[in-house]
Image: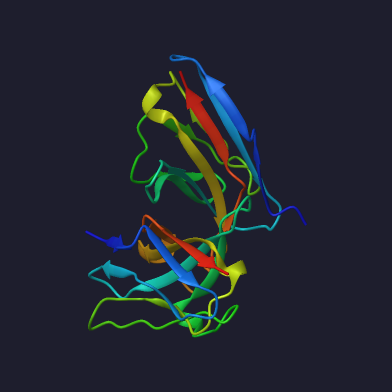
Length: 110
Length: 115
C-alpha cells in the first residue's frame, strides 16, 4: 500500500543554516510527489511539485527513486520559513488523490 | 477570487446530532476532496469527487456522506455525530489536465468538536 513517512515531527534550526525536511514514500507505481506548507493562521498551500523541478521561496526537492525519497531543502533558512510542512504522494492515477505524511514543524530561530 | 470557501469555521456538536459542512469553489475545478486531520496526524481522505454527479469513498468514509450536484459545491454530511469525528476538516479542489493533479487548493478548514 502507498505510504508517506516524515520522520521528524519538529525541526529547529537557526536563521541562515541549511534545512532539510525528510520525506520517504512507498508506492508501487510511478510517484507524483508534492510539498505543501501551512504558515501560522493560513490555509494549507502547495509549495512545489516534483514534476515541475522548480524552486519556490528558495526550496528545492529532488525525487530519488532509488532511496524512495523526496527531501525538501533550502540552503539558508529564514525566520519566515517557520511553518508546518507536509509531503504528499498522488495515487489512483487520474483520480488525483493525495496521501499526506504527518508533517514536520519547522522552527527557524533568529 | 475566493478560491475554496468552507463554512462554518468552528462548530460544536452533541453526540447524535447531524450537520453539513459546506464547501464551494469558484475556480471551475473538476476534482474536489474532503480530508480530516486529527492532532499530530496527516490528512486522511474521506470522500472525493471527479465531477458533478460523481463521488467516491476515500480512506475513512464511515459516518459521512457527500453529494456533488454542481461543479462548485461539495458538501459533507455528518450523520449521528460521534466523539471520534472530532477533527479539523479540509475541503480541497484541483484541476487535472494530464492525468495528475496540478496541486490542490485548500479551504481554511472547519474545526469540529463532538461532545
